[in-house]
Length: 439
Image (cartoon, rainbow, N blue to C red; front, side, top):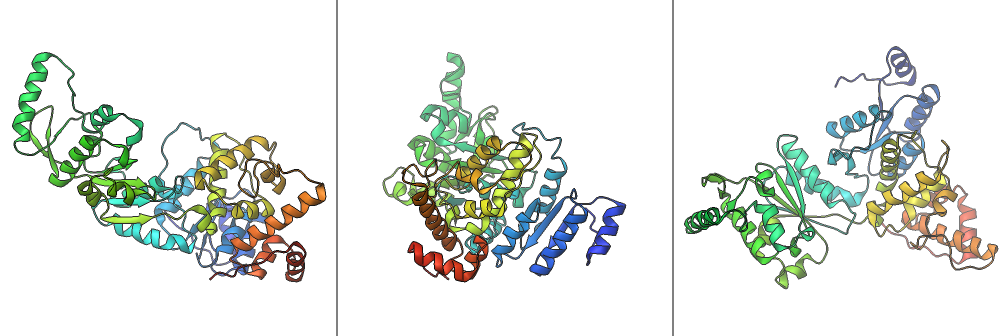
């Protein structure tokens, strides 16, 4: 990828007149850089534009999304991340929802301070071949983080093989993982298999077939969800393969090396599962050399604007619709919601809104409100009451949510609400809203 550098609007416009190139804007200068973005957008409304922001300025992420950036990247900037986004957007009009996998690093948003440690651990894990335990709530992106680690280390050279242990019963999981016959075939074949298995078990090695997921992951990554649901037999066999780093190939009887990077996505109850014996300790040790905790979306609200924008463009692209935009009020409300279902819930909400909003108009505050309640329910204010009472409830909950999003900082909350600080103080007094200032 070649890059043309431009340090002013006129030079950039001249270059874009000669050839239509994607634009990547450095927004580190804040308001001045945002004005450059607006000037470029006014002259070149169809030009594909991206922005890179300092994660210490989460407000710039929201402003970049509102200025029409197709995607927003946080520092440190990765070339692969940018290339993936450009490729995705250039193919926008022709894109079909064919179910093909995207590069996971394109989904790993890290604008928030809460994600800084996660990104550091992802980079550290990518430089090692040890097991990785990724802990977080459902929908936080555990598999996304695993794919990002795999992509940084292996790229496209090796397979990333995901498996949900809860999706199979004990015998089926054994077959899916190890590719073993499990008693199928003729009597003579079963006798031969039993004789070979007895001979190899004397050496302490497991037997693995070419049809199993373990063999598929050879040289790459095996990512497991719900490992506690795997039977004791499966866990024991898996622990032996990871310990010995070699196994007997069922089809030939030869001993082959098994270089596999194991990763597991787990929830917060994983330590209890080990204590209760639902996860073998020896397997757990090999899976948890590196531990990464993915914070829930409500604890990294700075990521929500860019993530919502990304999902919105993905959804519109899959439906072959012109890309929709979010109004400032709609984006502020989305960033303030509790998101108990994390990114999965966010994407589902946007899918519902896109389906309901006709034409090419922007998504407004009322479009979001028609699908959510500020307390996390499915519809807005089923409590009843007069219109005045409903309006007061909405204003109070909305102000509380915006204050929480901006950590109790009045000036930032007032800007997001589009009112003066004095008016915000007056509203807070009349609605009996208190604030908790957080660092």
